Length: 447
Image (cartoon, rainbow, N blue to C red; front, side, top):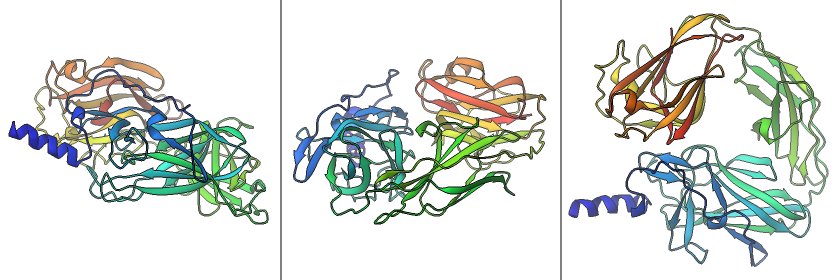
């Protein structure tokens, strides 16, 4: 009983309620709010509570055996229910208010009240979030500095353009180490802002391959209207000429300067780019488009990557991935059941969630052996973690279960070998999609 009490106290010190103990259920949780609750009138504006927001992007954080975003009671919360939203341990978590109503179009200030201690990330003293308004990203780097503990609340603010009537405002995660104890969002008129004219479209956009085998973009700064300052630029990318810039194809927000390097391109593939300027009055029309491609496709014959971890010879440190987060359990791994196993340290860390590895530089159409390394270091029962795997668009594993593949054992290395062909660009694009809990990969090899 004493030991159980100590565990409970430890969880509470991390800001986690007792109900969070135990394995994550297989079924994704649902949001308690739908984001349509009307705001509450306060001095100077309207206040919305995160407990009423539509939450999405749920993720099982294995270290706490709990789903996030989650609802946590906070005695110093402003809302009557004393309930806050914890986004701290989800890769793609979102909280959306779809009924933010203002009387007239213009610039408004969003003030977000929150609290967090360092918790399980002792070296992280700032946790950035993104803000999207009516489908357009305002920023992907709004800073939330540590407040000291989970009951000490502070606020951060951002000025955004809102339409007359109903608007949608979304807070979204940009890293797994995200903000905790989101309490309220207050919307107030921006006051003395004199900027009422949107900026002109950026001009002179150029795109060209550079020495880093990436595409370098440069453009001429937009001349700000009187009383305005161009705050940042949105960068968009498409694969067809004349594409329509939107939040779906926005690849970057450039806060400082008029250049951007796109290092996520595939070789010998034409890309089309547009840039948009933003001031406090709103968004410019997109710039004329520019196009470029990376012509150099270096030829390689093999690759070995330690998914989610540092270099462990002969495996390189984690690279060439998009999406997901990392996990690490220093368990002793049984390597006896596989041939040519990776070093044990490779199986102790992993990439998890929904993610893709793009391994390039192979001869287009060449045939290789793709070796995928796994070890289940958290769950111990069949069916607790299942996921799908596709290679170059073809599903090669459906509902793959690491524990089942290991004969029902936890902490046992598993290797799946698949003979595959490089695509027309010389790439192996390997995608992992969660079915029950998070997909998980310890390492990937192409031989």
